[in-house]
Length: 518
Ligand code: BGC
Image (cartoon, rainbow, N blue to C red):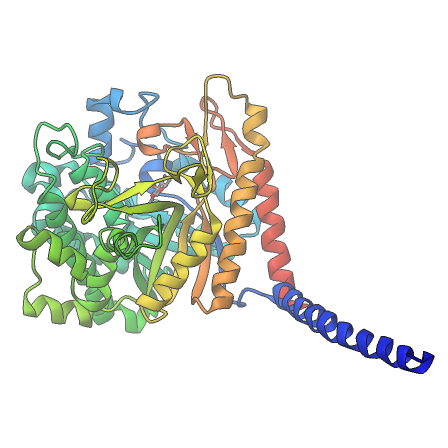
């Protein structure tokens, strides 16, 4: 081959390689530009979340009545890991100005908190309004708004006046729908001129599994082999309680739409707990089991709320144990459409079929949970990084998949991430220094916020993100030993001290707000 031919060949080869290389380079450049250019919409909410029983304390102050958690923690202190309770919690009732100052320093533009039912209505609709309770929430709402922080109010987060348990077994009775409606009317009336973001119930799916299926939360109702309770029926009661909760939600939405919305111009939705369920294999049976796991968890609530019917998987498996909506109720559910759904999300599981295949007894494997065994590993492979808390597995990709799943199933309904966060389990040897240096929380939140951005790029219609939680607080059965706060709370003095994650979240919000204007 002559020199000229070799020269031409080299040029040709170079240009071919450049084509391949340059197009890869261009592609990765444009992907990077896309990644970098992501910005949250200008009205996106960044907040922190809380709930009344876990935060307020002041359990007998200024007319508050006793609620289910007051009674439960006092009657059975041994059921709480540190035998503690929410009598004092983190005393937000008296320290809310200080806490708002912390929020201001984080740069959040919204705060999710819940109304303590028994603070506003100590005896439900069977007694009078406690106006000190109304004053407390008015002061909290005004103080938030004056600092540019939008109140995002949950009307009920697990606590209710104990009187409603004694009178008619709370959520097991349709009477509870009337009581909830009574509460919500008072809240819309007194707070709705300033509160524009409402949710009715916090994750009835998870709450009811704990209260009426496993019986570990009050009112401790369940039956063998699901749990060890003195009363209850795990095969029927969870579905009755959820049925009442769904209708109570719909009634509150209807009330808001017909009586308040036009003037107050707010929006209203419901909050569910979600987990991502990854089929453990590619088999049709495991894939169907993962779908059943969703049906028996978040779709249990969201399908009726959005489409007026239970998921078909539940209807098929539960038969007559699943209550039916009358024709009128179906219409009613469809009419009382939520403006958005609130998504609490913490974890993912592998799912193995137990309907067609033989299965070990375990979490999720039973009929009432859809014959879908929830596992944290397949062989040596875990679903994500496992943590000290047996239900929290770090798997941000599952969050992205979950949001896409919800987007597709519910026609891209607007969503708020009403809770996401990481819990540090405090062991006897854990030092405060270690708790303050919370690198794992930062890793968790940054992974999940990346996944959120990816899901939004995929098209999920997400309007806000609330970190659980502003402060360490009363974490139900774990007491104060499982700490979710961006701020550490000293158990004796209740002094709030920022953890590393607080400054990380402040920077994250700051950068993402700045990016909108770049
Ligand atoms: C609940 C919170 C709880 C958090 C962490 C959520 O399911 O709504 O009340 O503290 O999980 O366990």
